[in-house]
Length: 313
Image (cartoon, rainbow, N blue to C red; front, side):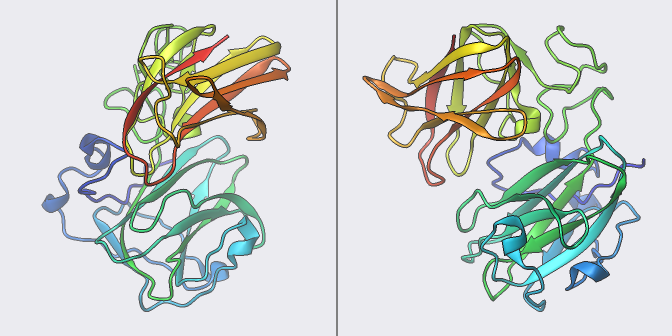
């Protein structure tokens, strides 16, 4: 399937290096701004059929046609819909950036048919970007719903990209590496996730579960929460049974008062949540069957930046 990219230079973006935002379309000022076809209702969502770059979207003149409760979202603002044909296993990344400090708080959702929610996110605070990565479970046409959250709608910069693991070059959104192959065990695994040995530091951008760093447990690993809605994800290949994980600062004390640690299974179910213990920010213990488990390090969306160490036994 051909690559589709809606691309702008997101000045001040906290989550991704500039080269990730420029690679699909070249320098943003080298192309004229594009118009993205969207609808006010899910059932009328137009299909994106051509590569589009530098795509601002304006929700101020649109209506509220999205029932956010479908995805568990409080989404009362102006909406816009567009559709993307996807093949099973394809990965797509959708990224919204508020153009100015206007008091807007957008949400994003991917719908498998207008009555079924496939994915949704409302993680960041007012005037911060939202982004999600979606892996299509089956062939079909999926609808992206953008909600401006407030009645004024909002003006945003929009990026949609299809990361392809194994094509080499600069890692794309939701990839922490791409060494040109899909082989495990060479530092970059078959899903383009960086493989870390004990003592290594995290590889960004791992603020998306599909781009999590792979940990060689047991071991300790260093990380950095960059503030403004950052979160870090790590995958543990669990052999089954008891697992213990702790979160603290690199000096042994708590990294941040608002730091949190969660353990999730492959379906996204939270198995355990860390609680403070002594000088640690968090400690959790769980018993789980063999398989991949996800460790998520998070903090309050308005938290200051901090460094931490996560340990897995």
